[in-house]
Image 1 (cartoon, rainbow, N blue to C red):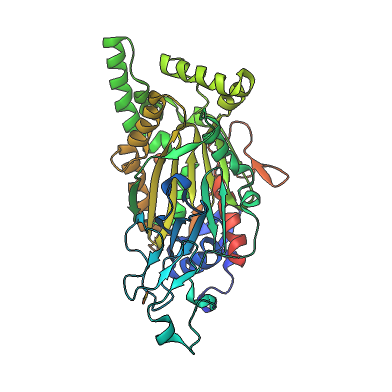
Image 2: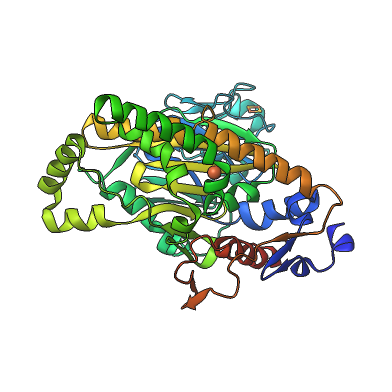
Length: 439
Ligand code: FES
Ligand SMILES: [Fe+2]
């Protein structure tokens, strides 16, 4: 049907603009699920979400309800949340512990944590002579085609072929390296639970916003200004305002021209990095205490390398937005052409003092949570964008800002100096999208 209506999808993506149907057409959405989300490496969760044997966590990959589960050998499996008997969902809770095995609530077929059939009631009397039994793989819970883990972050791909996780992530691996390296023990652990927000807009609108370095000075200016006033007042009164105010006031004090000093880097597969901003190195007593622990763990030289990584944001296409210096991660799960779930997680640096965690928590609550005005202002624009794109008021979405100034070297697109607000990351995402959609 899509083929009849839109015979050549590639005509919908030009270097500096994209047709609106890319965001609003339900058949295009279905094809995206098939050709992108149910094929590439999708983030399932962090291994610390399932610490014990039998712990499971539900995760949506494309349109597929999946389960991430810890096996008795310590490995993590990703399985379709479906009983091979009559199709019942194996678990209904978002997360929990299955005990020694999964037991279907309908007719009590049981399965090992890797999905293999363990037992069927009346196996001998009821199934002798039928095709159903332990030797038939159709009697197992189906596993994801591939599962890999990078520094504790578990990904699955529903396609058996394709690049390895490491190849797929490429330079965007820095998101996880930067996050884990900042922990004195070299690891992070998840803070349960996450915030979940359903946005009434297409999933790509969220991703395009992540490295849109122009929008903060516009969308978040009012919040930044209000925070700045309070910060100044506290400073006047006490001589020192908590760092958390700075997290919000920066939205007003970092003006558009300053954002232009940042740099974006776009990589194959649609991944991109916004470099700058987070490189700030506070010298308050909490940070200095943390620095001391880090130097003890890594030595001075390595410590300087670790905290010298200057990244604000890493976007791993098509479903992950990571702010590594403050241990924030948002996973994007498309639910429909105009409905997108984001899971908003944050992490604890293992071995770091409590105040460093508090900083991450403050950023989580102040900038990324559903309760903050920052998030609300973004959500309003996402919804309004989707409404506008659903209208007949125009056919194209423009990504032309600083177009023609991109510097391409070995498949990596760097923005030219003073072009930090370039729409190059969106151009990169749509280029990857068009490649995926070709099939
Ligand atoms: S549907 Fe699961 S045992 Fe019957
Ligand atoms: Fe924003």
